[in-house]
Image (cartoon, rainbow, N blue to C red; front, side, top):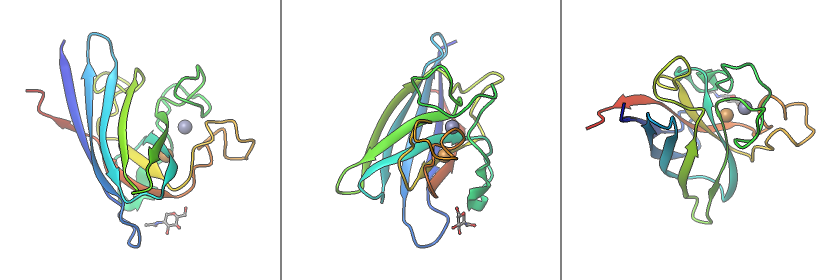
Length: 160
Ligand SMILES: *[C@@H]1O[C@H](CO)[C@@H](O)[C@H](O)[C@H]1NC(C)=O
Ligand SMILES: [Cu+2]
Ligand SMILES: [Zn+2]
């Protein structure tokens, strides 16, 4: 009961891009809602797909973090859709300065229990997520959001 906290330090392991940032995850265990907040810098202006991926493995940069976290075996969608991956958090928006300020609340990304996102990765993409509606062959799996420009592993943080 109470509050659980986690943190992810975002970086871009693959050389020529310099995406970085820090995100905090705060779950209210009475409602099950997790609040993701923080700042990511070094993005191109505009929309960027933003997801929880299944694995906390960055041995090959963000590419080894696996597919979108999908414990219920659903198609890709928007965060507000009934049909979505648990990890589908939609898009974040970077301003002309390349900075995205995030504040996302979601019920499918708990920090405890069988569908916990602890030890998995949060990933930022080069392109917008089409939320499953783009009609591209990748729309129903990845939202066709392009390369993985930044990622970080979600780790437990002291809740006091
Ligand atoms: C990750 O995959 C992309 C293709 O989507 C490739 O261009 C890039 O070089 C890969 N990065 C690493 C670190 O292997
Ligand atoms: Cu992703
Ligand atoms: Zn997805």
